[in-house]
Amino acid sequence: MASAPEARWHGDNYQSRFFWLNALKLARPDSCVAEVTFEADGPKAFDDVIVKYDPPIPGPGPNRVSADYHQIKFHVTAAGRFGYADLVNPPFIGATAVSLLERLRDAKKTAPPSSLFSFVTPDQIKEDDPLGAIISNNDRSLLIEKLFDNTGDRSRMGKVRKLWREHLAFSSDEELRQVLEGFRIHFGYSSLERMRQEIEERASGLGLRVNAADSDFRFDELARRLKSRGLNGLTPAAFNKMCDDEGLKAGFIPADGAFLPVAIRSFLGPSADVYGATPSNTLLLTDQFRERYLRDDLDWQRDIGPLVENFLRLKVKSSPRLRLILDAHASIAFLAGKTLDLKSSVEVELYQKGQIGPRIWTASDGTQGPSFFQAQHKLGDGADIAVGIGVSRSVDTNVRDYAGASLPKVGMLVSFVLPTGAGQQVVAGGAHSAALAEQVANEVRALKVRTPETPVHIFASCPNSLLFFLGQHHQGLGPCVIYEYDFDRKGNRTYQPSFTID
Image (cartoon, rainbow, N blue to C red; front, side, top):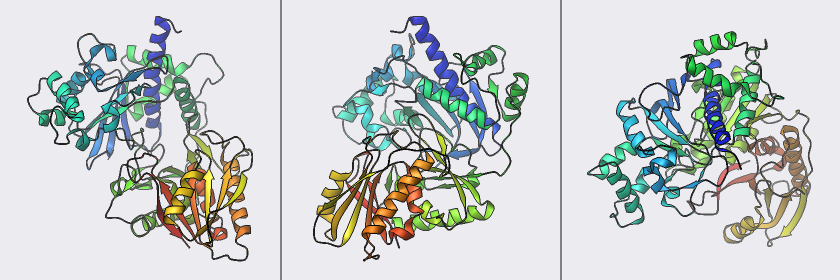
């Protein structure tokens, strides 16, 4: 068990590392981050880390965001749980008199209207607590329409509103709504070690010295020293000077134009902007979706597909070497691969996120791992083939249920699983991912040798990189339909077809 001083050190380091994850973006000329402040001077209200953007970035609603104010809370163990009542409890954030909601209220009095306010913690939300039902899995913002559901104070959401409203001494729900607009709760945030790994990768990519083999981590103490010297608010120019003064530059700067970072976003993750991609090199599709669900008035094939294909074809004209950042649905990853297929002569790096932090994956990165086990299951007398790829999660049961109810022409399920079982870290890297995609394509092609026009229905739970590489083999697969699954369990709780690829 960690001692009290050790717990405090870890908490300080957690805040420092969150600061650096944002401050390192200042070194990129294509970033929207204009200023990052560590422990801002002034009233203590969401001032642990402040990130300002110029130009403003897309936000959870229709308006763009010029600043994000962060309140950070760390606990040593993973046992921490909290609920809606803790937000009015000062000790929850280590305070004696002022609660988290009171700090939010005070911060909104002086911050620009175009601001976000983010509570960041590795703690999880208590099981079955109403708070979990009103936090978006899209961007961790509060689902205002679910909280203010026109029910009375005795309802489940009414009890939440009543407690928060009375704690803030508000006379109406409308006053509470105004305070909660733009509030995000990033629960279950990254571990200390994962943050260190990501900082090391970003710093190294920018030509900065890192001490990966050392027991200490220089960036932790450096943030606090900058604060003590009054240098805790960094702009791009101040960041560059600080790197010179502190001897951080290792003499390597990535060659301009080596890989053009381009991003496609159909949902918003915890990070406020896409690392490495300018707004002009970002296809933002979040207005077409509500959380992870396509708007009812739109169609994947008609409204989403052309936007993705045209965007990528335009970016290829700027550079034949692309670094592709996909904060996007699995279907979009497959379509991106189809657009940048093996005959396109485009060299692609993939920015792959995961439990151990983001990595750059390529088909030639030398990673190796086990091949798929393939099994064939008869589902009926139809000629169509269902392909189930269960890497991150098992998909066979859900595919069987869906095919039985909705796909009468599917006669066979071809299941691909790894001998290690399903998991979040079972794919070693880009080359391993590309090899798995090629295996799927080859084995499906062999099954269709006599009937090449037989439709293939693809159901996958796997890294987007694998789906990108599989999309590059679309011609060998023949006509196929890609499906999205309701993993958030807030929609139809099953599959839905997205793109049909000829």
